[in-house]
Length: 400
Image (cartoon, rainbow, N blue to C red):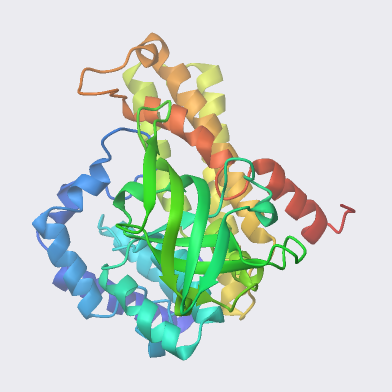
C-alpha cells in the first residue's frame, strides 16, 4: 500500500530523485550499507569509518550547499521549511538510491528544534548555523547516576557568575560523547523551587571546559556512552535556552523529538535488516524450519506495522496534525521489536553466535552486536516502562 500524496508531492519526489542521481558521487553507495540501523553494537562502527571517506565528505558538502542539511528547519534559520511529508519523501529516495543522509545527530534533531521553539533570534543566529555546517557536534547531558528516568530530580548545579553560568555535577549514559565537542545540559539553577521549576537548559562547550568524559564499556564491546564529571564548566548566559529556571519546558520539547524520531521512514532500515536475517536463516538451512518461519513471519509483520504507523504519521502531517503520545508508542514498539529480533538472530546462528569472531579488541559479529546492544534501546530515551506510563496517562486517559 502506498499513499497517493497528490501531483504536487509526486513532482517533488521526482525532483529529489533527479537531484540525487545528478549529484551523488560515484562509488559512495558501495562504501558501506548506509541503510542498516546503527545501534553501536560493535567496537568499530563501519558507518562512522565510512563518513571519513572523501566521497562522503564530497556528498556532505553538496547536500549542505543545496540546503538539504536540516531541510526540515524553517527557511529563516537555514533550512527549507519542509514538512514531515517532504522530509519522508527525501529520506525514501535516499534509501532507494542506497545513499546516506548527512545527519547532524543530536544537534539537528534535539538541540535545533529546541532552540527554534524556545530561543531568541540572537540565539538562533549564534547556535544554529554551526549545527548545519557540522562544526558543532552535540551530546546530551540529562541522565545522572541517581536520576535516570526521573529527569526532574537532577542535582547538577548551575550558578550564575556575571555573564556566565558555572556548572558542576555528574552526568551518565551520554550517547556519542567521544565524537562531540558540545553538550546540552539540564541543571538545577534554583534549589528552592519545586523540582521541575528550578531547572535550566544550557548549551555548553564539551572540550577543554573542565569536563572529564570517561567511556563506559558495553557488553557488546562498544563504548557509545560516557560518564561525565563536570567541575566548573562555563557557558555564556546566552547559552541558556528558554531562560533561567525554564529548562523543563525546553527539555520536554527535546524529548518529544527524541522519542518520535523519524517514525515515517524508520521501517526502511528494519526492513532491510529483516531480509538479511532471512538470508542468514537460509545459510544455516533453517528457512524450512516451521518454528523459525513462524518467528520470521512475526518479525516481518512487525516491520510492516512500523511501515503503516509511518504512513499514518505521514497522513496526519499532511493534514497539519502534530504527533502526540504516538511518539512514545513508536519508541516502545521499535525498541521492544529490535530486542526480540536480536534474540531470534542468535537462535538462528546457534552455536556460532556463542563464539566471537577474530579481530582486535572485543570483536562481535553483526548479529551478536544487535543481540547485545539492542537491549539498550529499551532503556535510553525513556525506558519502556516510562513509555507505557505516558501512553496510559496521555493517550488512554488512565489515572497515574
